[in-house]
Image 1 (cartoon, rainbow, N blue to C red):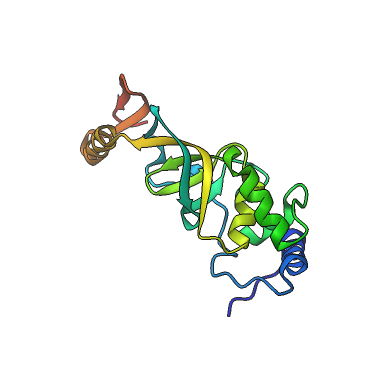
Image 2 (cartoon, rainbow, N blue to C red):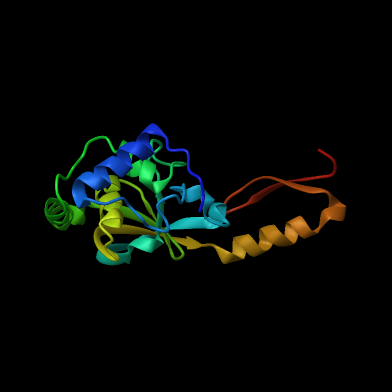
Amino acid sequence: MEDHSYSFCAKRGIDHFQELFGKSPRFPWQHNIVKSEKSVPDYDFYKKHTNIFLNNTTVCLDQIKGTMHCDYVGKEWIEMFGCLKKSMAHSEKNAKEWISEKSSGIILNQYGDQYFISGDGNHRTCYAKFLGLKDLVVGTIQVYELDQSHLNFHKQLKQLKELKLHINEWSDQYYNIQVGDI
């Protein structure tokens, strides 16, 4: 078994879980790191699809990998649970009711099959995970699509090592490329 030195927030998370459920949390993912969207492979090649917003959609909680909130990125999920700004539930029943009533306000960004909390919803999503729920109905999902053509072109340029290409910047419209030693 892994040895985890518990931070103040992790200890608070464990204590709060015990208050709610009368036992210690034992989830295989509770020590996983709450990730940033930038952890998505090829993140730079995703673009917001302006026409795709999914409303009142059911999402598997295992696919929610992190948040954009700077206070929670890089922490373990149990730490996030313990350092949420305020305790929003005082019993398991109360937590389930609160999530059910307020889930329409949760906003996620979708990158492939991964989701990240992008606005409201850090508390509710974290509580839902620790309640052991499998799915969560969320209010809005902004879909980001992988721009495969730009990714492929970028990889092709990188393979031309003998030309010593350096991509200074790029967009949908152009590539700013430097040839030779930098």
